[in-house]
Amino acid sequence: MTATAPPVAPSDEPEEQSALSRVGSRLRRFVPLALAVIAGLLLYVSFPPRELPWLAPISFALFGVAVYGRRLRAGFGLGLAFGLAYLVPLLSWTGVDVGPLPWLALAAAEALLVSLAGLGIAYVSRLPLWPLWAGGVWIASEALRARAPFGGFPWGKVAFGQPSGVFLPLASLGGTPLLGFGVVLCGFGLGALVLRVRKVRGAPSEDASPVGKPSFLKGLVKDKGAATAAAFTIAPVVAGALAMPLVATGAEAGTARVALIQGNVPRMGLDFNAQRRAVLDYHVRETMKLAAKIKSGQVERPDLVLWPENSSDIDPYVNQDAYDEITKAAQAVGVPISVGAVVTAEDGTPRNRLIQWDPKTGPGAVYDKRHLQPFGEYMPYRGFFRIFSKDVDRAGNFVPGKKPVVFDMAGTKIGNVTCYEAAFDDTVRDQVREGAQILSVPSNNATFERSQMTYQQLAMDRVRAVEHGRAVMVPVTSGVSAVIRADGSIAQRTGMFEPATLLADVPKRTSQTLATRAGAWPEALLVAIGVGGLGWAFARTRAGRRSDA
Image (cartoon, rainbow, N blue to C red; front, side):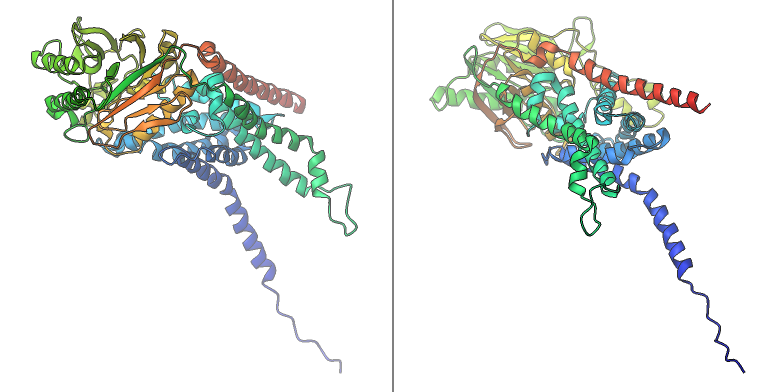
């Protein structure tokens, strides 16, 4: 009789491996989404108040890897995820007093514009030199966000997260577009390098070691794609370092002794001006303290005094008390004061106005804010948006000014950029071209309480200082007020929600940086690069379809 072997039970191992493989495959599908979300969060974290500008290139490296080679629909979705992860926390200050709906609606609208960038970057990522075209596409998306809708919302431009670091000097060459492009190009170059490293590592090598292992480093050195990606990564860093000596800070027309008054407000939030007379009184009181110190010899008399935006929400043209109080403060210090006031213009329209107030002759030259904040200083489509929130009726009805105005204050030319206007390239540039020797950015951040908005705006002002080679004075009702040098560094600053006075000898500068002279041309050139890349990708796609047919 022949012995029969017992039957062998079928192994479950192949089925288990197959199930694990399927799970792994599904999880891998979420890797690009996870990279896009992490990239967006890193870009947010790179912004003040943390001031970690070096995180921005890492963010775009991850985003570049996430969208590389993807279909247009995937690029759109990944761009949306990136934009939401970035902008929802960055713009959280917009909901401080009006709740989450306006904040989330704004962040979602801006993220949709970022998603178009994701779509475009995915489209050009199949081209040779794709980091270059992708960088141009990103700048094109920022240019769009700076102009539409409702006059644009440039807040969150990549350049505004670079108030320090190696890339910052690029602002003096080509403004915020070139600065942002340098950061993004470096990041996409780094992402491309990572992708080339992965490809070379997985490719067979002709030059194998005795034990059969490929010579990875030799293959990487020979890879032209890796060399190009490394060049894109390094070039912006080198350019920033080479441009650093071009950032000048010295006086070219003497110096001016400037006083910044931070009077504080009686309360935070949208109702900060409920006691409008108190806000004016606080700024008069702080100015009178300065006058007393001048009289006693404790401090030297300044050449001019700068008050913040909304320092007089009582119209001094029609209210005699306000007129008398401002005149009293100007006469006490004996120098002109730039006063931020809410007034009714000659045509009957409300204006957010800066008034040059002379101690002898009273109110003189005026500057009306030109870039008004939608949903704050004016309400577009008020009737429609009232359906969603009654808070729309808290928005103002201000009318914008039409031209730049430089104040000649005791022989010093002060260029005015009121608060939100600092986000707009053309508004700041116009004042420097008008002859400003020093820039002043009077602001009122009391509405946003102790949120990160103040620090994001301060970073913006620091970038503008380098861009135009001007010291920037930032008088704020509730803080943070600051004296910023022309190299973007902060010479003096105050705390928040405390009365304070800053005194500084500030260099007056007259030369114009290359960025100031070039105007909008650097942005136009960079946008053209992005559009050119999209056009090339489209042409290749059509040619491929014809050959398949």
